[in-house]
Image 1 (cartoon, helix red, strand yellow):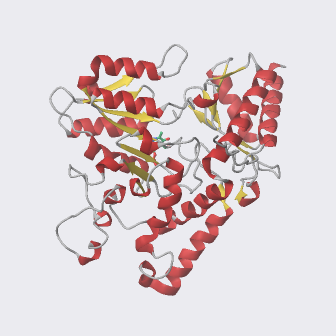
Image 2 (spheres, helix red, strand yellow):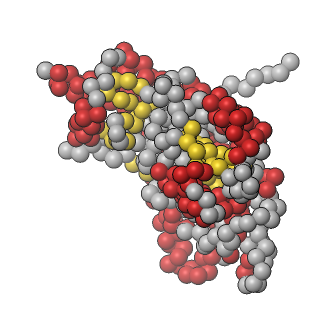
Length: 420
Ligand SMILES: Cc1ncc(COP(=O)(O)O)c(C=O)c1O
């Protein structure tokens, strides 16, 4: 008989005291619901940065080599917790670079157009930076982005369906060199079945990469088993590592000894010989071999502090349940109080939503914008995505039921005032 382990429990907002939440202006407490854009600041981030500033002052250049947080090896401190968040092996992940730059790095290695197989398949409405990156890479190969970047359109429900991606790949898979797909779509908040997407791409003989900007620290990930060739993410959203923080990338173990094209830099050199200053590049095995430059320690220390919070919380299994409860409560209150006025675009089945719910006002774009601005003026931080979406993302580490209730109550009041 197998014994099932109870999921570790985490109450939404349980770590609120470990964060600094922006206030709402004019002495009112803030309602910070913007983890989808910039996560709130862990108090421990300040100590982590201070510690490295202090080491710099005390040790100078010796800080690179001395002590448990020696800067030359600092990224290794992040590997195990990142691997746990990503469902990856430690050799498959590395904290490095920034999202768009990492995406370019990965496309150089894994977008290999040949013969008629030269398309990149993305979702229609993909994040502009991803769109620019794939178009410029197609261009770099002397191809035409207008022809070779293909966008899969959502259905009439406004959502993208895995089945449509499968159909496309069944029909045109022999022309697709690479599929680039989000873990969570940034505008709608829709969560995808990444295992299914990876299977469909592999079946079609195409490489597959994932943009996990909105997924990491938000939803469960099983990158090793799902089997994408690569994944990239940033750390300033649900990972709460601060603006422009160090990002990360995943390269599947099957590419550990990759000998195809890559952009190389000395931080990716085999660690045994990195400082022997040899002219020939020999990459470190695994994801670490795609590092380029000296790690920006002051933009990395907050991530180390933040990842400890994920560990202390019991990891994604515990946080995921709290997150579903929180966004479920938000959806329930919106339906109960504001049905007919506010539409939730995000699909509500638990496996298709993460922290974020994307809202649209039935009264139209300018009413939506007006509501958003008035929410802001009343101390709510959420965000606006043109042309007509308000994104609201309660993050279970620091948001609680009260945040969600105050948000719905205030929204109801502002809309009622407009009707009068
Ligand atoms: C889905 C997605 N991709 C790419 C980016 C660009 O990230 P960066 O500016 O860190 O390169 C973002 C930023 O928010 C994003 O949400």
